[in-house]
Every structure is written in C-alpha cells, then in structure tokens.
Image (cartoon, rainbow, N blue to C red):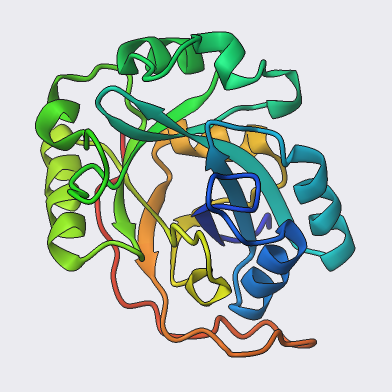
Amino acid sequence: MLIRLAMLIDLHVHSHHSPGGALAPRDIVRRAKAAGLDGVVVTDVNSLDGLDEVRAAGREEGLLALVGAELVTDHGHYLCYFPDPARVPAPPQMFGTTPWRVRDVVERVRQLGGAVVAAHPYDKSIERPSGDFIFSLEGLTAVEGLCARRKGPANDLAVEAADHMSLPCVGGSGAHDTLDDVGKAATLFREPVATEADLVRQLLAGHVFCVAVGVTPQEPARGGRDRGGERRRGGGRERR
C-alpha cells in the first residue's frame, strides 16, 4: 500500500537578498527545521538571486529549501513560484521599470508554468495593496489567507476573498528581519514535495490549506520531529 505523507511548508520568508532583509538562508532553514516544518520557501522581493545559497543551506541542514519570489506590482504583492527557477530570467529583465503591471506579471508567470498567490492582499501598511482588486484578476492560483506578520482582520478578509473566489488559501510567516517569525504560519501540502515543480503542481491542483502554528522553539533542535506547536487554524477550500 502506497502511503503519501503530507508536508508543512512556510511559503513566505525573506532573506538578506530582499531590501531590508536581515536573515541568512542557512539560519532560515535551521529555524524552519527547529519549528518542526518539513520545508521552507524563500521568496525574496523582486529577486531570485538567493537560489544557490538557499539550495545549499537545505542540503547542509537536511531540510527542503526552495525558492520563489515576491513580486511588487501596481496592484499589490504576489508570491510567484516556478517549476524551475534556475531557468527563469531575473524579474527586472522580464518586466522592466517598476511598478510592474500585475496583469503582465500573472500572465508571464503562468506562461512559465508557475503559480501566482496574492500575498497579504488586505495589508494597508504597504503601498498599493491589492485589496478587492484580486476579484477582477484572472489567473490567480491561491490567496495568502494567513500571513503571520499581518494582523487578524487583514488575514480574515483574505480568507473570505479566497472563499468567494473558490481559491485555496495558503499560509506563510512573511519573516523578514527576525528568525522568531519563521514557521509561525505555513501551508499544508497533501502530498510530498521534493522540488519547486512538485510545489507548483500541488498549488495549481489546490491540494493545500493554510495552518497557524503554535509557539516556535527558541533554539534549533538537533533531534526529533516535533511540530513545534499546535495547529490552530486552516482556511480556504480545495479546488476541484
């Protein structure tokens, strides 16, 4: 009998390759492992520059470590995941002068076989949040219904939007300048993920939902697979 194991992955973490980012990929991976996650995706702002460093950190620490990008557009931020990020041109080469048009971003990412997630769409602290604009945006794969760095109402509105659009919800910490945030929110994948291609395939299939994780440990654990806290909340619906 074939047993398929679900995986818990933080889909939204920034490294020092993001503007204002302070986290080294190796430290991110260690923290994710200590939090009991099965993997982490580094999504630097408008950049895939950390690819080699992130993959090396994953190999050294024995944890799945993948790369995507958080692209800033004229209508919000979008987490973009590619089947083979090593073959993707640098975002500035693809889109030119900022701010990039969101419809161009979504179209190009989908042409490359990727998945596009509306990141914290109701976060009023950023310039040009997407808000209800996502209702008119074709080609979205999912909505980030749980971002650990955002306050409750913004997440609640995102979950409602995803439900209204019949899109799955994903979760991520949004960690940027402190390791304490890594692993506080994540996405549950129903089947094993080993590569970016696996991740994109399951996102496009909608086999995911967001999970809030309890308190993470203060120091990296060297043994065991404790999840680091209670799963408190999921959201969205599976696409069929």
